[in-house]
Image (tube, rainbow, N blue to C red; front, side, top):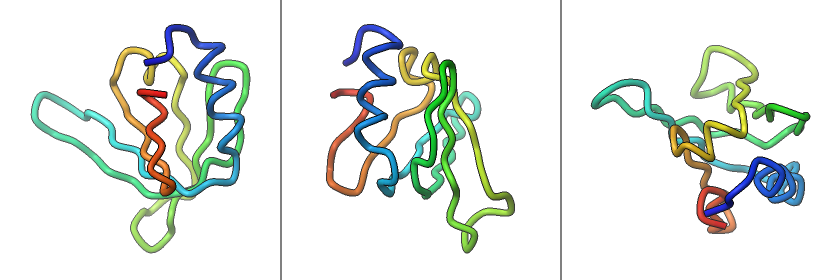
Length: 85
């Protein structure tokens, strides 16, 4: 697992434009899965353009801290897992 936010950002920078699935913990026993494309990375957050067939909104953003604390995991279609890379 990446040990710093900078490492996570660099890993995500290498996957810009790649399709992925975001698995987020939304509560004690609730998990949400969203499919989309990694669109942009910024200093503190990254943006995912969501599949419009499955979602009511266009984008969602997450902080790198969410990955570091395992509140979300990213699964890229090529099989790479950003939370473990």
